[in-house]
Length: 214
Image (cartoon, rainbow, N blue to C red; front, side, top):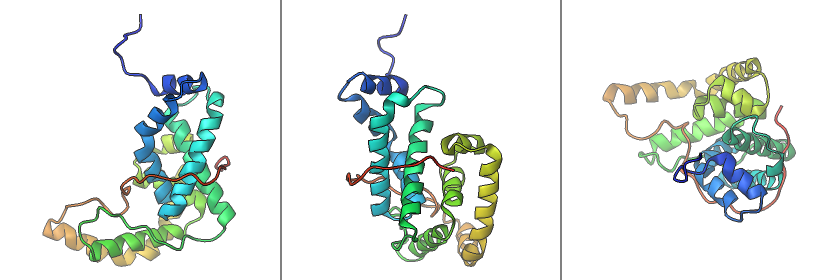
């Protein structure tokens, strides 16, 4: 017998949405919006583009909820849709982001902010698939297997994309090494690493879209 006091699971919320519950999808989004936003922001590199991509993903998830078969966790399904929406926008845009990401939580308004700008600019140089893999594994902390499930590719592909992405990033970030070493020597550990997720923001609906990641 089910425990009436047990919290509603993600799968139950999604099923409720499919069955006509008007509040179920909003609750599901509320639970996972922070990480979904962080993934979109790091993948797109620009808050406005990330907001558009996230809304593309939410519209797609809202309309495709009936296709969820429970073969993966609901979070994996949602994050896959977010990444696909980002990659779709990157491919359609076919240009690099022009506004670099700045983590608003960084405590130092000068040096730390410059590091964040450099990291964002370096990420923008990567092919979209490599960027997505690095965002999931190195910045969001997913395992290789989890990232593979989200992107719908083999684990070996994720490893390859991460390795190639890191190799391409290195020449553009090697100048930051003295900065990180200096902070470690002085014990300055306040604040997140500049490649950690930025503070979530509220997105505004603009369009719909999204393709399967490759």
